[in-house]
Amino acid sequence: MQSIMRINCKPFTCLVVIAVFASSPEPSQGTVVEPVRARHAMVVSVHELASQAGLEVLRAGGNAIDAAVATGFALAVVHPQAGNLGGGGFMLIRLADGTAHFLDYREKAPAAAHAKMYLDRRGQVIENKSLVGYKAVAVPGSVAGMAYARKKWGKLPLARVMAPAIKLAKEGFALSQMDCEALHDEELARFPESRRIFQRDGKFYEPGETLRQPELARTMERIAANSDDFYHGSLARELAAAIKKGGGLVTAADLAHYKVKEREPLKGSYRDYQVLTAPLPSSGGIVLLEALNILEGYYVAGMGNRTPQFIHMAAESFRRAFYDRAEFLGDPDFTKIPTEGLVSKQYAGAWRQTSMDAEQATPSASLKRPPNFGVTRQRSAVNLRQEPTDTTHYSIVDEAGNVAAVTTTLNDNFGSRVTADGLGFLLNDEMDDFTLKAGVPNMYGLVQGAANAIGPGKRPLSAMTPTILLKDGKPFLVLGSPGGPRIISTVANIIMGVVDFRLNIQEAVNAPRFHHQWMPDKIYVEKDFSPETVAQLKKRGHTVEEDGQWSDGECIAIDLKTGDRLGASDIRNNGKAVGY
Ligand code: DON
Image (cartoon, rainbow, N blue to C red):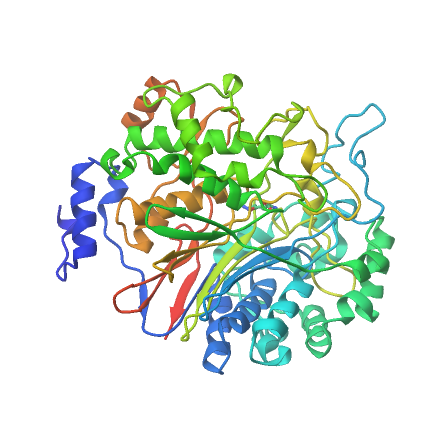
């Protein structure tokens, strides 16, 4: 009991204490931790130096969008696993004037891509071809996206916003233990330029040593001088030449045709909160809203935080939402998708009435959709695929109340592992997010359908879920995470932690996670759940797999009474919330 007693017990926290006792929680739920509190502005990311880059730009008179661009470029330097110039991402923006915007700078398939490009002559998926090496690379969107965001919504010149990142690349930064471990990646060693830059040709970096990236600094200086050069100028030609030499498909014409897309943010609600989240080509928002809509019909708070009953009901909701993801979702510019039906409250109600069982797991193989919601079966062909392991999310709130939630990725850790010759940055392996072959279940993970088949110029379906919750029209939570499909359940877990269980944002981010994605038919739980909880879930008919820890919530809450910005960097990683 000592560990959760507080001296200044605010009503908000007292509620947490009550909830904690009422529900006989998991042991790790007992510690009250506080987010970082700042009066005016907050930047939270997976790396302190990237958060500081954002803060520097805010202090220099930039707004949340300038800071998002500064943090994004800095992550490309200090977190090369996922921060990037050679990848893509989504930026969800809520401006102080009340307007909301969603920027899609997802990678797209090159013109020469085709549905069977990763299959051998017998029609089998060629191992690793879509994951490692030049053939895995899709047309990168990050530089275009960040430049577009700054130009449209930012206040400072691009060169000013990129200055912290350029300095970090030029002067270097001290590597942490975690950084050094990550740089031991075996696949990186297969590509001489990557091996030279990130592994010092086999003389691996030790913690505390400085990583300098002069080629990256030079590339960033060129972008700062003229970001268009990356798509239409000498940078584009050099990049295309490097990819061609390596046997990849992305050409100068693909780069020239790349377009950032502004899309309508997906809008919904959960209890008393409005939800702004990611639309297609991310599945994140649809799956998140569908699962939350189902759960909204139950008194979740009364079930108790992380109790078997709660985990069961949430997992059953995830199961149904992911089932729909597998069947229907893909690039909306190429396929008609029944988004409206999927995120309607009526559809969620029908799931509750016709399908949800409060006591027993519904086997995924026997799941049946409620009829009559415009959500009809397409094709049964789906594809279970291995899940890559890195992406990164960061959240920003500025003094004026502008908000940016950004998730960006190379897909896998260090993407395709290819560093563009002479340019110093890694290239994505986002092609692997497409359905490689319909109907072939793979060992691990995610189910994909025909709507997400590879096609020239298509954007692969994503799970990235930058999300903003509003209360009475005012920003309340800024959320997101890496984790592939687990991004969505991570964001849902954090939302339920705050909304249903009255956890503060740091507690909600730290709380042990669980996940279900329809197939494989199991609940994944983090290592902190007790054997008794696991046994109770098994009694309900679930297969349960403990799977270490995952995801990385880098989130902000806004104290609705005082306006204070409350930053929460995930306890699982080395990130940092910084504010003023
Ligand atoms: O866009 C997507 O959904 C994936 N490329 C994200 C991969 C990811 O989050 C891996 N991180 N742990």
